[in-house]
Length: 54
Image 1: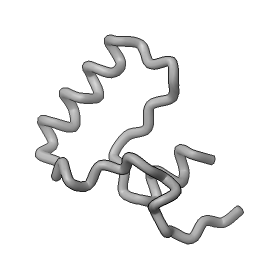
Image 2 (image 1 turned 180 degrees about the horizontal axis):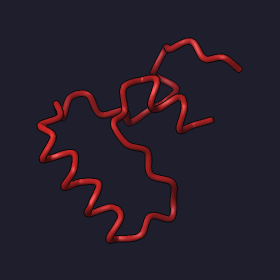
Image 3 (image 1 turned 60 degrees about the vertical axis):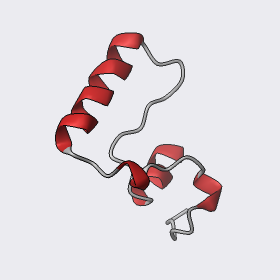
């Protein structure tokens, strides 16, 4: 459910804890290479007001 909410809020990836270091580094590299806007990071799902189909 959190993954769907984050992606609906514009997140490019979703990492579930615990995250393996290699997976985290690969994800960071992909995001940096894609030229994503750092201001579009979703830190707080509760602040995102996107309608979900629950």
